Image 1 (tube, rainbow, N blue to C red):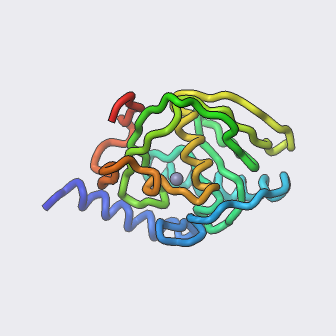
Image 2 (image 1 turned 135 degrees about the vertical axis):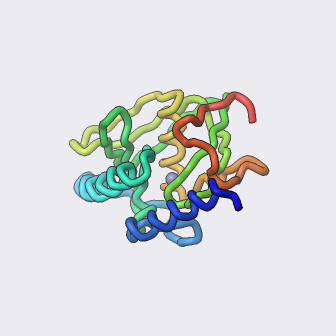
Image 3 (image 1 turned 180 degrees about the vertical axis):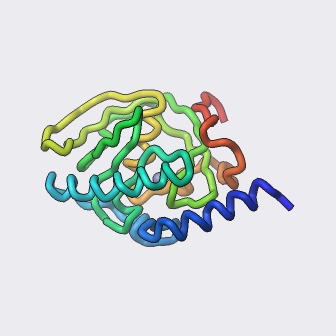
Length: 185
Ligand SMILES: [Zn+2]
């Protein structure tokens, strides 16, 4: 008996019960291109998403981002929770990214207990609108570049599983809080 796997399966069962609003891999809404929203719609969705993300973090102890398609809304909004702060990104677009890449075993609420090693750009430039209606264009690297690329991919109908490197999908038996960005596979 693989104890670790059994523990993960039980944890996932609890997640399924506690978060009935979450959509999982196989749901067509996760594989669509999200539509642009008004700032007002973005604010409302951000509130909903933020509530689920905080509840999820409380339940499992991790989770950094959550995108509207993951609650069945085909809309271009995601939220993140970084440094104790929830932030809403309305109509985000990655407009530039580095050729240089790194690797990371990504988890996703919508991918259950499967993780995917995904190769992504080291840095990006992202444009978005905030909840006050202000437009931003900013460069990010490190962990934030990774997080934003994962969330933005949701808005293009891509899950981490869809973008995994060859042979990079596995059950999440490692400690997600100890996972690091790697230069190589
Ligand atoms: Zn995700």
